[in-house]
Amino acid sequence: MIKRYFLFSALFLILFSPFCLAEEEYKFDISEIEKKPYHIGGYLEFRPILFGLDKDASLYKLKFFKRNEGKTVEEYNGKLQLEGSLEKGIARLFVRTNFDLKYSYLGWEHNETKRMIYEGYLSLKPSPSLTFKFGKQTLLWGKGYAFNPVAFAGRPKDADDPELALEGFIAASADYIKSFGGPLKTLAVTPVIFPIYKHINDDFGKINRLNFAAKLYFLLYDTDIDLIGLTGGSKTNRFGIDFSRNITSNFEVHGEFAFFNNQIKKVIDSQGKISESKFDAKSYLLGLRYLTPWDTTFIFEYYRNGTGFTYLEMKDYFTFIDKGYDLFLSKNNESLLKKASSVTQGNYGRPNPMRDYLYLRMTQKEPFNILYFTPALTTVMNLNDKSFSLSPEFFYTGFTNWEFRLKGTALIGQRKTEFGEKQNDYRIEFRVRYYF
View 1 (cartoon, rainbow, N blue to C red):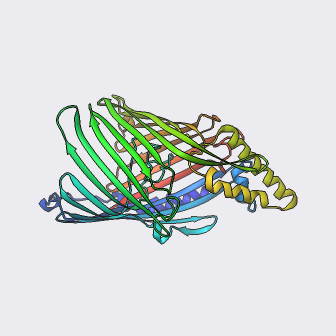
View 2: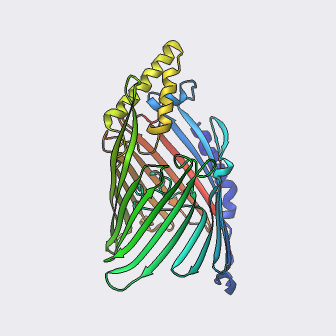
View 3: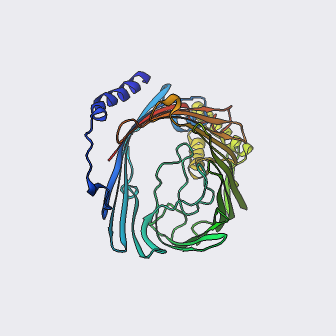
């Protein structure tokens, strides 16, 4: 399978390389620098992945207890992301669509029709300081790079690839910005209304609710500060604050703090008994970004997930899966595995389910004077059980409108730890994008 994976990827490169290497004639056209009332763009992506499976892991047993996939499985992903905008007077229409196609051991899969539109809204700007938006929009709240505990009005980032575009929610929002002299240079207010009904944002929380969120932004003493809140009943009330400040031109610090009222957590023990608790949770993040004189960028973050599971709670969860798998092998009884699967979907299967994480990413721009080449190394460590992921990658943009990324990820940890019980030991992926 490994040979077939790399042969398939190499064939793609060979077929498309003539287009990458074609020489372009430079022409200057004044119309190209004039602002047009419309914009159309996007990218086409091909991303094959090879997974190295861990047959002793709890999550492998939970997912593949009826299958024997061997030591590796392949996955082929295609994506077409299109975006366009049209401006007329004070109005602007913006749409971003995302078409995903995947071929795996389950066959062909694609995203649902309602999930294809990531953003689609109408904005009205009656004055330079006031803007209204109506429609599906992505609200990127928070100052963290990999984690955002105060992103109450958005979807969680993937810490493995936090720069991916996120799907938005249908909402009505406004932005009012005011500038001042003195220590307070800028003040901005962003109120948001979220309708949560059947077929309208029904994956946000409890349906048949009208939710309200707001962000109050200050630029105070050269420090960016946000006060954020969400209420309405689809989720419990939550409030937060974040900040970002450049200490020097190449050194930035940032942080977030979030308070969640009446948070509910369901826990399963090693015998399969489910208990529920209600409590007020606090989550926070502290991070920094530093650029060295030799163009190495460091991003470091500590994330405290106050709604997460403890080490013992996760250990009991993995132990219960193993008991369910033993019961299936001995008596062909799937009942315990089905119960484990139900709690995985609701709680344990979410990104970063435990309490304390460290994130570190290092990138080096054009080492050894290799133009358009950027290697990087990323690690996410679970401080509660000492398991972690390690991801080296190589990024190249030497051809016009093309980008290439080769990335590997190793998941390292003892048994009964988060990364040690993942269904795969490693992953290798090769991403090719063409922008237009």
